[in-house]
Each structure stands twice: as structure tokens, then as C-alpha cells.
Length: 593
Image (cartoon, rainbow, N blue to C red; front, side, top):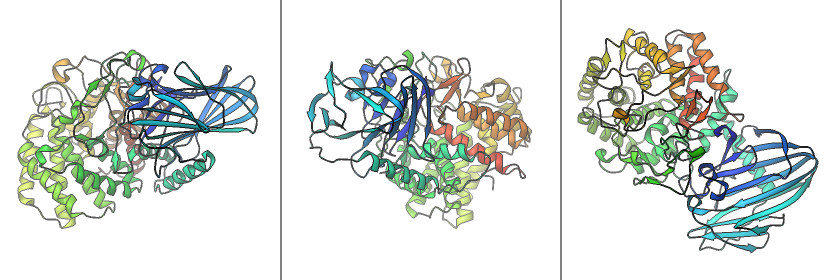
């Protein structure tokens, strides 16, 4: 199950570790590099690194060590208790994955199985012995495993059997290196552990938030930080690909890229907690990534700013629990999505309000985007949910075009910036009038998914949150209640009613957790405080044992679904915790001020 995994990372890539001690997903050296361990969407033969007792395990406990991304897993057997400490040091050069085995009680026989398969499980490397370990190379990739534990080859795997007694510790360091270079650097696992814990603890200590859910918020903040790419400032939507939105289905996508939408939402959550440095770094990444004509803007980029994210299927991988195809790359990178303009401009304005320094280049880009939007807002698009059906006039997209105009105008009014404010005010008013006239269906009693449609869409829960209309407006309240009644099951909200003529895909998917957090926010805004708190606590209860959330939740199977951990879901948790605390005073709608 997806819940069985925990995340470790170094803010440049990440690994998923299962409850039984197996690293089943790891891409080196970047989030979007080909995986060397791909058992998550395949089988153990597609690559994994198992460290576990060689005897039956009777109990498993695991946790993150304090406010860090260092994972500790305690495994109990009849012979004794052993702990695994897994982490990735914040790198100053080459990337490492470090594992330390600690004897806690008795004497436990252990087994290690290392199966290296480069290029998503398709390439068996050439393995040779080196001092204190083994080296594996194939094509551009090399891995070096160093340990004092004796290793032996077996059927294209590397195995080890050893005992760990109480008080004993054994370290394992796996390092990626370019295969054409010699790998000579050594690392002390225990020193690396101390440095890694210190780095994360100091980062988490900058959190400025207080409130009843502070522990949950801090864990989500650490998760978001782990999804940032430190060299450039980019933020990935998730560290995985093709974890299914519906088990056994084909809605399996690669999320290891930087969506402008996801990144701006993430930045707002980080800035709200006092982390403005990440916002400044992302802004510099954005300036580089979107260089060119405004009409050439992409809705997502690679972590280095790459634009060509060609989508491919990997037929040799069976998929998570048989959910196929497994995809890498994402064809949605070439889609036209109006809402990203609003999200980028909103993040810019909020950043200035929270202390991010003004930047002339950033405002030039924002101005160019808004100038382009003056006519582009009238065009149909693929929308926030990246439908693979025909382009339509999605109501949410038009609303976010209004947000872009509104935030540009506020930038001029509140910060003395230059721009054609009178012209933009006229366009902002025109968009607002059109959305209210064509996006609202009086018979449905709600704003609808796209002009002329009777279908609902949970993205319209954003309407009062971005200040388009107040929550007190009867049309907004009607929309909230319609979504609550028709798109919600057991408190979990679906994005929309999936139909092939709208999104071009087979129907059916799990609920979308960010939408559920939006519903909590809206219930709070319309004065249903107790209902909002109950739903929020319900959402907190589905986090896995180390506080992580996937993209969605399957209400039938009562389990997490989709790529994991998902930035969007943790953004929703943070923002909703803030809103529930803030709105206990007279309600304040975030961006109407």
C-alpha cells in the first residue's frame, strides 16, 4: 500500500522506504532522473535495496527523528529488536543514501539484498568489487556501496547476511557518481547523520506558526522542503511517477516536475510559515524558466527549467498493483492553462506582502504575462485538471485570469509599480461580469465546470478563497453546498464528475485531497465552524503513520491513492490549519484585501 512508504530526501532527489525496510524508489541524481530502484511500480527485480531481519518480524514502529527528514524504523523479532536509520545527507557534491543498522535488544540475524537496475529497471549494471564494497556502472550511471559488512554476489544481486547485537551498529553508504569518473570520496555515516539532523532541525526552527496543529503543519512543511530542488529553486509536485489515481486504472502520471500552479501554492504555504528564502529562489528559477515570449509559457518545467518533457510509456514495468501504463515525462507540459497566470501573479503579490524583496526583472515578466492575458483570457483551455479532452471555457480558468489582473492592479496600487492600470481594471471588470453571467447556472444553483455545462467542479471552491466573490454571496454558498452534496463522499471531495467527453479518459478516480481541504476552508468561511473542524480532523486521520499524504484517497478501499507524497495535499493541510486558526476571529478572505 502507498501508506507503507516514508520519504527521505536531500532537497535534490528523494527515496521511498517501505515499512519492511526496502528502498523501492530512488532516482539519482535528480528527482526526474531515471530510477535505479523501481520496485515501487514494478517488482523487486526492477531494483530495490532491502535491509531487514532474516527472521519473522512481529511488530514495526517508525518515526521521523524530531523535526527532520531522518527516518527511524524499529523492527521487533523473537530474537530481539533492531532499528534502521535511513536518510540522505544534504549534499555538497555527490548524492548519498545512508542506512545505519542499530541493535537495540537481543541478537537479530539480518539480511541485505541490493538489486541495482538503472533506467527504470531495464538495465543490469556491471558490478565489481572495490575496497570496502562494490561498484556498479552502466551507461552514464555509477553506484558505489561502502560497508564493513561482507558482501557476496548472487544471480545479479548483491547479498549480505550478518548479526547485530544490542549496542552494535553497521553503516551502509550508497553513492551515485558519473560512471566515467573515479569514485574516491568517503563518508562517515555517523557524522553524516549528525550533520543531517542539525540541518533539518535548524531549518524547521524558522517556522513562525503557532496553533493547535503545529506538529502536523511542521511535518508538512518539512515534506514540502524535501520536494524543493536546491540548486535552482524549483519545487516538484511529487517525487514519484505513475502511482495510480485509481487502482488498476490508467490515470497514472509523472509528477516529478515543477508545475507553476503547484509551486505557487507551495510557496504561499511556505511564506505563511516564515520561509521567504524559498520564495526568492523560486522566483529566480521562474525568471529563467519562462524566458521568451509570453505565449510560449509552459504550465510545467523540469527542475532545471527544461521545457521538453516528452511523455513515454515503460511497458516492461507492470505498474503499482497492476496499474498501467507506467509513464515518464508528461504531455500536459504543452497544454494551455489560463489559471497559471493568476497563480503566478498571486504568489508575486503575496511574496511582496510577506517581505520578499521587489525585483525589476520579475515585475517585467509579470507585466508581459498580464499584457498577453489581455486577449488570451477569452480563449478556451485545458483547465486546472489538465483534461485530455477538447479545450473549453472553464469557469475556474476565467476566474484565475481575473485573479491575474486583480493582483497586477494591486501591485501597482499598493507598491507603486508601473503599468496600464486603467486598462487592466476594465479587463478585470469584464472578466468578472462574464464569469458571473456565463459560469453560473441558476437551475443548478451553482457555478459550473465550464460555460453551458450543468456539471460541478471542486476547483470553484477557490472562488471565495481568492476573493472573486465573498462567501456570503448566495451563488457562492450554493456552489459550496452543491459540491458538498454531489461531489463529496464521507467528507472526501472529487475534483469533478469524470466523463470521457470532458477529460478524454476512462471514468473514475479517487477523491482529491486538496479539494477536501478547500471544502474545509469554505465551510469555515460560511460560519460552519464545527463542521469545518470535524472534516479537517478527518483529513488528518488518513495521514500515514509518519504524517504523509498522497494525492488522493480511495473511499471504497479506504486507502491513499496517487503520487506520494503530494505537495498539493500538504499545502492544503498547512493553509487549512492556518485558516481555521485565523478565522476564529472575524472571517478574513485571503486575497480580497
